[in-house]
Amino acid sequence: MSNPINPITPLKPISLQENKKIGLETVGFDQEQNFSALLKQALNKLDESQAEAAQATVDLVTGQAEDFHTPVIAMEKASLTLGLAVTVRNKVLEAYHEIMRMQI
Image (cartoon, rainbow, N blue to C red; front, top):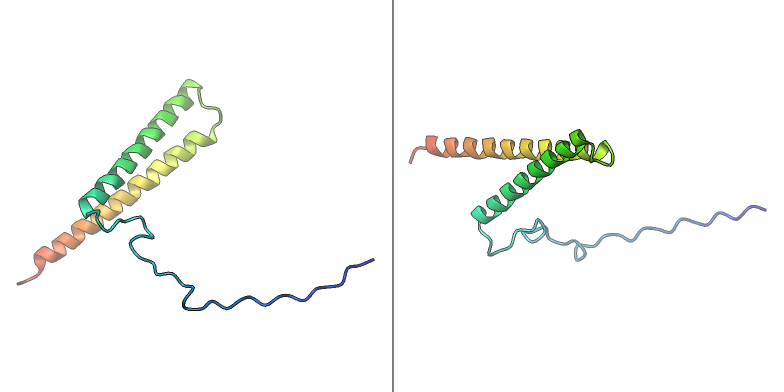
């Protein structure tokens, strides 16, 4: 025998009180932390991903890697991280040059 079709229950509307503000705490930026500390942390993560990719490459070449996917993923992650860092650097330099061109 077939089961009867149950009606679809309506979704609860989202109220303004349930929305949470997206602030600095959401992205992991502490109020007391300054920009230079945040930049150092990002550069340390970049260095870690580059070192992890280098080690994964050595493991793949020496035959110590369990599978082929892990080193490839580590290298792609390092490549994307470096690309992001270069893009951010270029934007910061562009903003600096724009500020230097301003007349006071």
